[in-house]
Image (cartoon, rainbow, N blue to C red; front, side, top):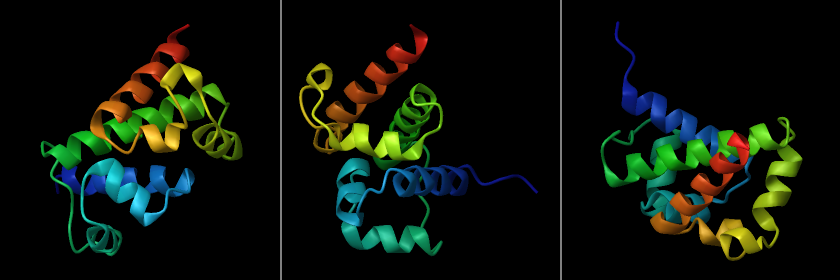
Length: 117
């Protein structure tokens, strides 16, 4: 049986959001879906298509989370603190900056570049 890429992506994005303690409102904004869809994703009624706009944003969210987690040596509390603290390098509070696709890409790229240093 072949794993379903949409299911893998959806579960990974939900796990990253939970680790970052993103609210349903925040997660919906970040991945570009309606708030009521988040519950459908959680219970497995819907999955995010990998190549959709929401799918690409989920991929960026996962990349962002992995890079951040790497930078803080897996300390989830530090991940959450970083996300909620003002950061001049990303132009504000990262939790607010990632609310749109351009901001999410910017934060993901910033963190990935930081990992590479």
